[in-house]
Image 1 (cartoon, helix red, strand yellow):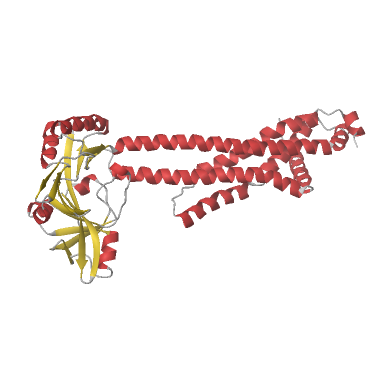
Image 2 (cartoon, one colour; image 1 turned 120 degrees about the vertical axis):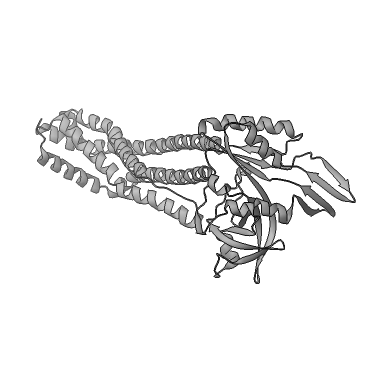
Length: 424
């Protein structure tokens, strides 16, 4: 079948001309699809950005890691001596040994002891959370090293007074001073800054890792020697003494398929030696799967909203084209009378609906890109605009225009020429 390009260009020009005769009506019809498709692109960008950030934070915790966090039970066992209340809870050094030696799928375990202390450098002071851990912590949890180095095995074995700061804490405390090699005072002891890592934050309840904006990492052996295992707090006029050996334990498993069975085994081991529920177990891999499932659900919801908005826009196009058929009944009769075939009438009206749906393409893309930019710029939320979302939205809008334009076009082509010529 030979394509008559001259006729196609003529029909296209005629379609544009007919739409320009009713500029306001064409514009209002087009806006139904413009805002529908634009909002879909924007929602997908916001949803994709939020989902990507959440899953990236979970991935940084390690898909083969199990995080055990000590927590104060609702009904804790405590003793009182000399008006000083002693509270004992949390993880034990023996828990690390038991898990390492009794569960064969465990590759490595990293203990963590955390405490809040004031830090001083010259005249500047800053509250830091001191995290006592081993050199393996930086192997299991991804953190970008900005300057210097992280702790080594020699630092742990020698109980070296060294510290690794987060970028935020280093900027607040050291300001413009040379960071690496500087000495800061924490809890009555001086520590040499040997490295700086990028600040990360994860505040998802039990999934919170020992990595805030103002953290200082020191060897666990140093933390035990300088601060011990007993911490004092003053609450409601009473002095509370807490005995906590470990605040957290990160367990690394050999393969992802063994993560969840290992978590169950860890739970059984802890239940044997803890009379009260003073710990919680979190599995980043399970959270990652849950986040991906949530993302799929969110995509289905957005798709439903998009379908409704596009359906409304399509109905608007059909309504306008039916009105156009009624207005141009006499014109259709004249064209049929001088030899125009029904297929040519159908093609003419379909071209107009395609022009109407495609003419807002640039505006749709602009709206879809502008809204995510506004959200990122003023709300600080991450957004991700993908090429697939733009192409998909444009393709759907054109398809909607054609789909809802078929009925008016067929109705126009089926008019009786004699009756059409009598129409006023």
